[in-house]
Length: 271
Image 1: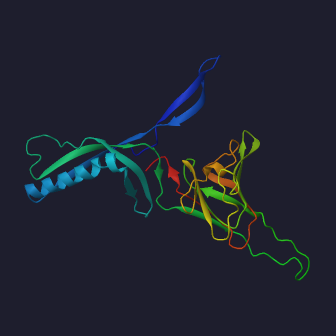
Image 2: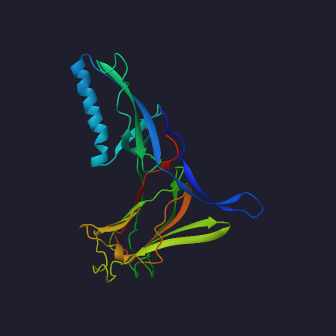
């Protein structure tokens, strides 16, 4: 088998006046996996039945969407990748093959070259209980910030998380802070349920909205499209870099039951 290593990249470069070149951008390319497959049966008809069933199962990925190729290791860890059938399910065509057994070297095409962990990582933050301003003495409880936290991406490459927000909330803001060339850079996006493009009003207790960063989509719990509620054009639906990421969850107008759930599957270069 082949194609289980690191992804291939197309490099965009600029010629350097003193010789050589400078890397401008690296674009990961689709992956091709060659997978040897041996099929046999106790009789010719049993072999043919199995051969046909496998051929149908692989080629239907071109009609029904990709299948999953999953590799499990002895320690229980697993990595999987979405695959389409490309070619190779023809058999050896040699004397004696195709009677009760045959072999094929099928090529599987992967539009996303990275392997993912099928175990989803989830981060949950919920508003604490609010306190009475006068009891037992004048106090203030936050109705805005759910919390600044560190989200760790154990994978090799950037992941694009999905957010689920549970009301009450009148404005939803997510911010990531990172260091770029020695400078502190903040990227954020905000969702306003009261925006004219949405026309809903503030999220009430128990109402939910889901924000996906790849592809960018915003769906209310009834399936309606809320993408117009994002603060375009300044919104940056950021991903999580490998390692630790400083993230802030902020819900204006939060109260008991307000919560944020972030989920993602780590992505890896190799199987």
